[in-house]
Image (cartoon, rainbow, N blue to C red; front, side, top):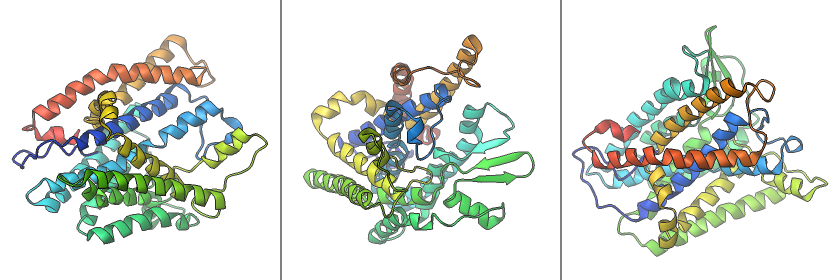
Amino acid sequence: MLYPVTPPTGAPVAPASPRLTSIDQLRGTVIVLMLLDHVRETFYLHQQVADPMALDAIEPALFVSRLLAHLCAPVFVLLTGLSAWLYASGQADGRRAASAFLLKRGLFLILLELLVVNFAWTLQFPPSVIYLQVIWAIGISMVALAGLLWLPRGLLAAFALTMIAGHNLLDGVHVSGDGPLAVLWKVLHQRDWIAVGDALRLRTSYPVLPWIGVIALGYAIGPWFARGGDAVQRRHRLLWAGGGALLGFALLRATNVYGDAPWQAFASAGQTLMSVFNVTKYPPSLLFLLLTLGLGLLLLRLYEQPTVARVLAPLATIGAAPMFFYLLHLYVLKLLYVTAEAYWGQTHGAYFGVDHVWTLWLITAALALALYWPTRAFARLKARRRDLAWLRYL
């Protein structure tokens, strides 16, 4: 999750662009939705949510909450690619500087997932299980983009669309064992377990192949946001791209022939509608990405409106320091859970949890407000102290 307005020390600093506010606001929006989903995973574990969701065992309010959270990872990854292009466009050596930074930051994120993020979920050291989740996927995608960005833009866009649209053709390829090729395939496309000796297992929660396509797509649309570019044309492109993705979702979903598991008709119209939007995230199906990226691009178009930008200014603040917010909220949630369990005990079988989905929304709102202030302080520090190179990695 690059933040394009903070280049390395000594690099030329371009004037701040109002357009970047929309990027931060969109990033801030999905961070809050991510917070909602992680509150669910903390205080609603007694109501398990499968992928895709089991419609006979999930209430509509919980379905909608999880569906909204689907926006998070695709938007994060797309904006990472877009921000990489913006970063490159502001450097004297352009792609070379962006490639080097992507490589270093990608490796940093991989280590962060292994050493810091996983501990926040498990509180286990040394770990017996490591979950390779979204930060891992973003890190791997950034490493891949460090090489892919040298491709001509048209070829890069073709590669991105091929990965996004074509990877479901590989759904039938399954491997077993922990040999080198099996491990590679589990990392790329098969959500599975990898045994590392007798004491450690890895869970490839986020197979990375389609995410590499998404980050490449973000980089390919970067020129739409070129400084001094035609803002009206960019908004038209965002509108057509977002609308086209949603139209593609509707057409493919109507045919039920490709891109995800078929939807089903139920006796209830509400359940049938839920089935239509019940898309697969691990790995993200074509229909999952058409739906979420289409909505993300339309939101990016909406957030360029001055009135919307003023109303959503706090979200831009959160979006300016996304990694700080991400790490902070994980440890705050774990602390809250441990404290609540110690005080009230296990209220739902093996878990402590709340009873209603609306309570999850209330907890999310309270946490978003509480975490806003330290995140704002860190974002201001990051903007002010550009001489501290390590801040660029958070």
